[in-house]
Image (cartoon, rainbow, N blue to C red; front, side):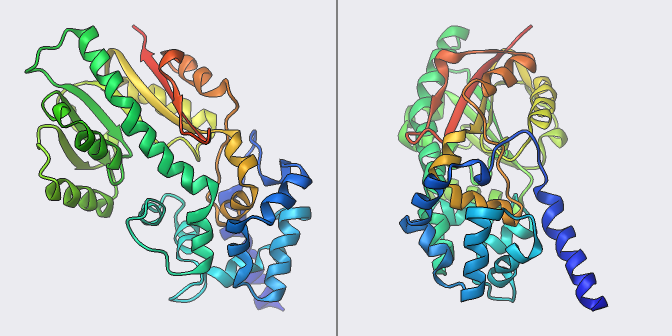
Length: 334
């Protein structure tokens, strides 16, 4: 009994500390009827297909009625993450580190998933919205770059410098340059991420496509450790703020003003409440593993920019086509 008590305490330490949060909604706030609809959807059924019967009941009870207030409601989590070949690689990675970049190789389709459970992740509305977010950035950002170049009066020999903070595989910057080859002579993406594996993957893709190295470079560091050689005309902060409470987002926005020219643009992506209502089963799985999202209301992203020293440029904002991810644009005030 002592051993069981110690294990129970360890489970609580491992599971409940990372998922504590306040001031945001989660799957328990979604109406019961909507949860039933989502539970019957194709992607949600994949999460429970390979669960043993008792664990399946735990999962459904946690989702529909009780939340994750007890260790018993999370027994399925141990089942899908235990062992050297877990039922869910994605959940196992996230449980170890919510910022694990290997997850996005699966979500972006750079690697195939190996299990039915992980197919549930990939086929969920939330995962599809991550791909749509990428496509929306590739579609929308070039026009903003060209408009800003015109506003600044840059010559053809001057580059518009963008710091892409938390760039991971830099697929947004790479995609923009591939879709708009003329920008290779006009822009310089500085893609910054502390994860070496992600940066190596980005470098490989850049080499494969023979992209101009003056148009894109990759730095394996945290932004605060980057030696400043020039302030940026714009900063991209894509995906990084999604699991952050507002207080930490504001702290990040304020600290990055140092890296941005006066009047420069800050592009902040946030995850909106629509993602929660479109996929509450996914939110249960993410909450359980400690990969929690801080869903924003319609006005919050702009308010965060305004409170952090930026003028919200609402006319430049855009969303992915599902409305799950909002890209809000602020201009650094003097």
